Image 1 (cartoon, rainbow, N blue to C red):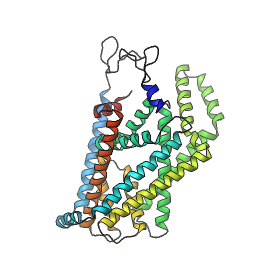
Image 2 (image 1 turned 60 degrees about the vertical axis):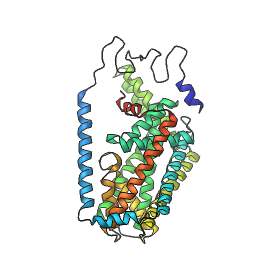
Image 3 (image 1 turned 120 degrees about the vertical axis):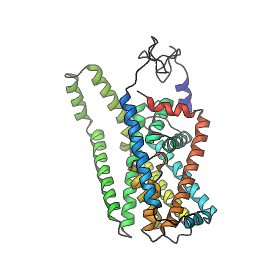
Image 4 (image 1 turned 90 degrees about the vertical axis):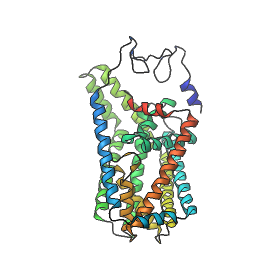
Length: 376
């Protein structure tokens, strides 16, 4: 992709696209290794580190609690037997559906980014897999942050614009989950806890769409407020706010382009249908005599619980939610846990292998991946 090349090449004044100069220093006087040009070290606040450690610890505790709940009163011999007897062909079908789901997500991101920055399908898929790899192996689910930073550094989109398109991705996913919830409700009564979670999702979607519509279709009011702020606040701060607002507007412009919005919705629908098909393949691998509607139900329950803090890889929470969802349809807990352990291990392994391959193709080392979370 040409934008990749142009952004990695040095500019005529010796500076690079990430703001650093050829001698390793940045425009603010600091070097890329975190030290300043005069040789002094840049001191990072310890409060952020303590907060991150605390969040990571909470995630581990939550994962442990959910794993205990999932494994309580389980006949482990039955769970292991179910794992051994799982049909490998159906399991392979589930993995194929998982990868195809990510391809559809990549296509959607290309559509959303089209009006603001150039992104190929191959690059979109690679960065999505790298992001999921980050969520799997890094604490605090920093994979999405890593994905956004990598794309912002290798395209001309700008950090805010890139993250705005990612926000639209999440919004479309929430809309898709709501539609799946409605679909399931037409066939079965949802448990109260699932209804409550779906209600929070509906509220989030409504508020998010409201904010997007205000930002897109009432720009005059926003400009007037910025003009008033310019007389009260420093010009640099107002200029900074205006720059962020303009970048966000470029990222949200996809929602003003009807063809782009239609294609984005089509990719979203295709992705979630494929994900449900993958869940159905996994259930058939364990010889669960359950229907398509049950596969959608299991998919919805697991994704509604994705907001629960947990350790990297969604360990514990995934297992408990899978056991809960399958148990609602009469599957024995021991067999359901065998399903959860096998499918989670297979999904995680696929993400690590494909994500690692994408890292290698992009020439990014894991150490560089971890350093992206330290951006200031």
